[in-house]
Image (cartoon, rainbow, N blue to C red; front, side, top):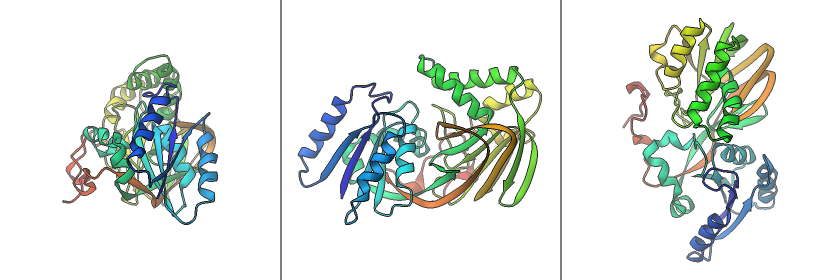
Length: 323
C-alpha cells in the first residue's frame, strides 16, 4: 500500500506552518521504511483534486490511501478526487475548524483520528457519498437559508468570530430582512412537492458547523439520504424554531420541518438558489442529489465499532444502530 498526505496549509491547526506536520509524518515513517508515502501541500482551492487524480492515474497494482489533513473542505477535495476509483482509500485527520464528518463518530472519538498509526494501519469501512450535481459530498448538500448563512458566516469566521455564532447571526439577519425563503420544486423519489420553503437539506451525515447536528437520523453507510425541509412561517416562528432544528429537535417541530428518506432528490427554483456541499458554495436554478452507496472506503480507528456507536447528540432510540 502507498500513502499520500494532502495538507491544507490554511486549516485551523496549521495556519501556514506546514513544517511541523511534515516533520511528524517523516518521523513516523522512519520506523516503517518499507512503506511508501508522499506529501503534497495544496496551493489553492481545488488544487488537490487534479494532483490526486494525476497521482493515482499511474498506479494500478497497489492500493493508495489518501490522507486528508485539514477540515471539511479538504475532505471534500479528496472525496471529489477518488469517487469511482476501486484502489483508493480515504483517511481524515481533524485539522480543520469543524471536521463535520468525523463528528458523526461521536465528539469524544474525533481525537482518535489524530493518531498516525491508526490512520496508516487502521481498517476501512464502506461509506456512502451524496452526488450533488457535478460534485460529491460526504456530509450533505443543502439550499436556502442554511446555505446562505454558511456563505455569510464564513466571512465572519475568517475575522475571528465563533463558527456557530457566525452562522446563527447570519441566518437571523436574513430572516429579519425578509430573505429567508423562496419557491422550490422538489421531487423526492418521484414524489413532487412545491412550496415556499426556508431551507432544504439533503444529509448523508448529521453535522455541520462546530456543534450543530440537524440531521440526527442520518447514517453515512445506510444507503439512504435524509431530507429536511423547513417550511416558511412568520419571522418570529422561524427565528424561534430554526435554532432548535439545528440542534436535532426537528421531531418537536413537525409543523415547521418535513422529514423524508430517499435515494434521489431533484431540486429547482424559479430564482437562483444558494447551495452548499460540505461547506463549498455554489449557485444555480436546479440540482439533482443521489446517494452513491459504499462509494468510498473510509479509515476508522480500530477503537471505533460502527455497530456500537454512542448515542450521540439527541438521536432518537429508533435512530440507533442495532447491537
